[in-house]
Length: 77
Image (tube, rainbow, N blue to C red; front, side, top):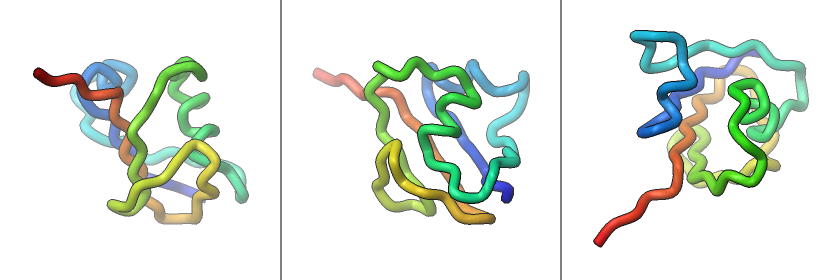
């Protein structure tokens, strides 16, 4: 199956140069955690995850055509 992945803020450096999003091919039944592993995002990293615009977590099972957005934690003041 194929999913579209966008990484934001400091994570976007993990994408190929000049790419805002990439199409990733995964095995059926893959999860957001598999996407994180694909991009070598450290397991201990706290992430904000959206699948098709809705909040998700690393255990969310993906379907063909899903759109995954992954954000690092956001700080503010």
